[in-house]
Image (tube, rainbow, N blue to C red; front, side, top):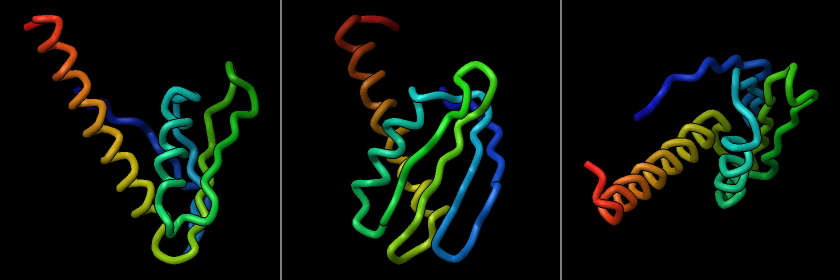
Length: 97
């Protein structure tokens, strides 16, 4: 059930990352940011959307230690697994095949 998203790296250094995620909104960025903040190596994880209808969200991550891109990939992978598990349980409970 995965769909690929266009992601533009706007800025990347050894500890910081700023990426634009095309076509997304708070639905993805809020849980992704929350998951990032659960990582003790993440110092800052936030996002902004300049205009809901006319701009894409920009995610900003600053690390205490470690690679910001790896932290984002790890958080996104964990969320995807969590959502896949929820979907499987929902289908099972609802008897949807």
